[in-house]
Image 1 (cartoon, rainbow, N blue to C red):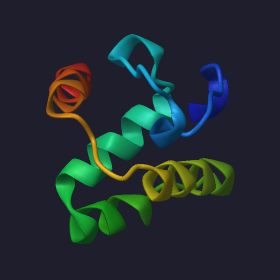
Image 2: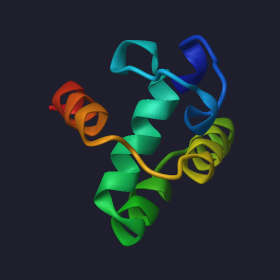
Image 3: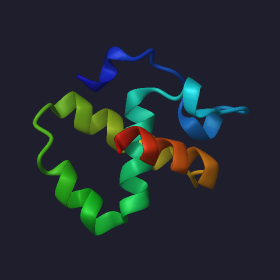
Length: 79
């Protein structure tokens, strides 16, 4: 379950966000943003836990943009 990580404020509300301070949900949201809306939507359809879907959707909505350095780190985590 994604919410096992410490829940923090939405990414857009943090002043000094780093890869190390991001929750798993925030990392998933950043990853999905990088894929674009169509691909992200297809992936979200396969997440069965409704609370995870809601948490990810809220994080996606709260992120205005993802810093390229953070996105690189997130992608390396997924790789």
